[in-house]
Length: 396
Image 1 (cartoon, rainbow, N blue to C red):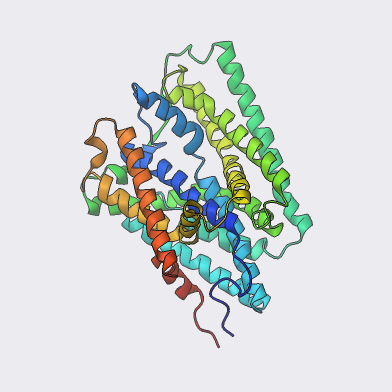
Image 2: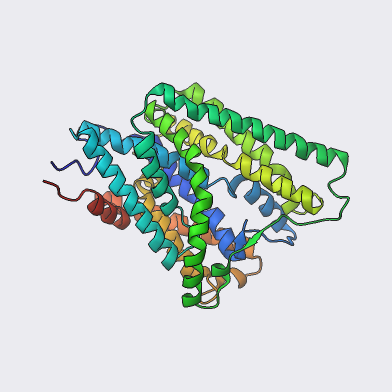
């Protein structure tokens, strides 16, 4: 039996998930381009001046460690959507599991190729592994079992509050600066500073496995997306308006408040010692996961008033349906425009931060326009075509 290769006939594609995926790629572009420009994590000018101080503040508070959680939420959401479409097409539970496992295995392959050829900070491979685990252990569980995800998020909230209280105590106690002024801890990425493509490729092959391991624990974020999809929260946003509103306020509130101390240090407006800076970066990362459901909830609320026929919404939705192609296109752009051995534009126009952000927005807009053109012609993205053919192979 051959399973359906697209949306089930007669079932309207929900607007909010596509809108969220399209907008998500802008957040990812802003986060990744900063890392590429400064060849490190988090991507940050260590000695900002003038406007760069404000940009550092905004990047740390709204973007860094806040893009991948949106990716993770939508990945878990999409897994349930795909399984639901397969169920509706008449596929058996075994066939659905086979399709999902094959798709996620190919995502791991895509991720390896992406990292080896283009960009070390790949998420596809990690989410492919997460998708396999979720398919085998979580997909067919009942509602009571999936409430465990909410419990885990409640525990994470407590963790953030405890770390936040310690950070506030450190700041108010004045002990943060007793050892001098230290920048935020950062990690250099060799492949981003490599002088040649061959060297960068060898570096990426060593960096990708470790980066992938750091992403795997974010299955908790994807699990929340799975829970949300089971309740059709983004397919029926008007019905869940109250939940979406509270999620947007609390999710982004936690992310912004938790990221603010590190953002102030990164902007050069708060001076602390090395141990306090490390603690603030820990709070920054722990609170960042709440931006995932927070941003997704905002997109869901916007979808209530939006219609797919609008130009902006239609273009963003088109990109959301081709998010894999849009994501990979960004990595090609970073390699061509920013690598030291290619155009190296990041260091040519004054502020690397400003240059990187302009490039990120421009590249994202280019993907929006290309997706819109493909949508008008009724064509999927090239990466989606390849993944679909590999996933839905003919079976007897």
